[in-house]
Length: 303
Image (tube, rainbow, N blue to C red):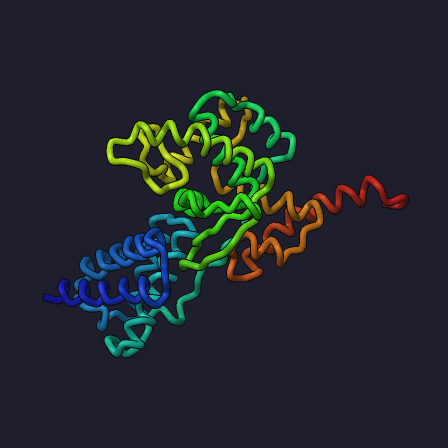
């Protein structure tokens, strides 16, 4: 009975995340994983309801996580998820206090974003066979990611009509269903036009269910997934003989870093990336500071 009651409260919380907070499926799935882990801890300690959880319960739970040598990032994420759950339950009058409210979130050192150098980008893009159908598609994807700084999920959600070749922009629905228009460079537009006119038409012909509105298609003519794009990028790195770990997000880091290195305003980069807060974009300034110091040391007469 108690488990059913908890599940109903979790369902209400998920509805709140979907409707009021506009959270993505990925974010909600992570919340649920963290909540389920805490439910297991409650069951092991004969705690049946969220209402009866105390600060002492929370401290014991965190101690078990540290004992299991969980990473600080994982612990911080669990605290954040459960604090949000209890904040919601408190608002709805389902609990009397938020036992996670006073919990200290472990300090996490900011990792500097890794990026590609311009020579590496050129080497990557020179490795495509312009006559090959899948190479045309892959080049269009990578050129777009580097040109616009899109998240891989945003890229996979694009439809054909989201590209405006006349003004060189792409319409994007980002995190929290926030909409934005992002400029696309000439190299990416050329690669996209080539892909749409040739490769995409051929891929549509392989579909058994008719044309799909997605911009990027797999070899069966269906929509390309996030995971597929990651695999594509991994193979492209190998073919270009580049020795590095690569992900679509690294191209996003590269996009931002190269803009700032060449004098772009931080607030403009924030808008292009779709960041809600400037603090999310400021991490890239640590990377560009290294370049500034390098330029200073090379060119100042008394450096």
